[in-house]
Image: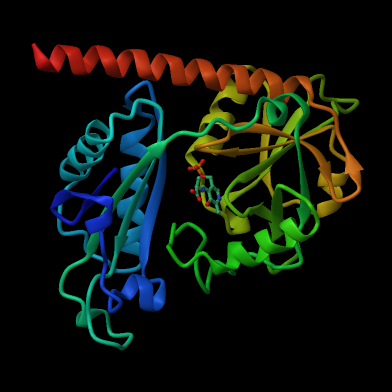
Length: 301
Ligand code: PDD
């Protein structure tokens, strides 16, 4: 297995980072997770845009351009002969002596890891996953903004520990006002019944103001719902709103759209909106992969 480290591919046994790296010492850095379908990195530009946005929010200057990162990702995929993969790009503040001053680090450390994608069990999509509402609250956006995809993941890890202790797959975190924010590695959606005035169900998801990472999958799910004339409410919601929902689902790059069958003690069946959006999502992926393959073929001619 090969890993891209700084400026080159190295065998995994040589892929070593210093104990003085500020990523290790302070969790000072940013990352992105991407999914590769049939050799194509899905939503690559969007992920790179977010990587640079996260970096700029922590005043980390990624000294190289997005084309270099794209090349590094594809070289890592080719070197490992991967067509369906999980890709993680990490940029840390880099090597420097102990201390919080970012100027102690002269150059960021850059790593690309690519691994064979392990499919989620089909039963997750058919029957849904169990989640809990965690006691651990999401970082306040004025403390450490969840829009920064930071390698300091302790907040999420603490909530994940709670989920595991309760035999749940994911934990939904509330913000400091007790409003629903997001999962530890996912965004959350729920469907409300059509009311007396509304004819179609309403799809709800916490707004960016709730203090969340604005997931790329979340954005696609919202666009697909709107395209299919499903009304979307990006708002502020309580756990009770979740408990009284008809359907609940989670989104992220690797899981796509995964139904939830239980939040705490409340059960849900996998509903039609979740199924419709997941099918539509898979079509978006298929079209994206086809058109990106075509454009790379044209580029080679
Ligand atoms: N996690 N919220 C959090 C806290 C996340 O960590 C993620 C992604 C998301 C969903 O974002 P997207 O749809 O862009 O993947 C929401 C990735 C998958 C990870 O932690 O590896």
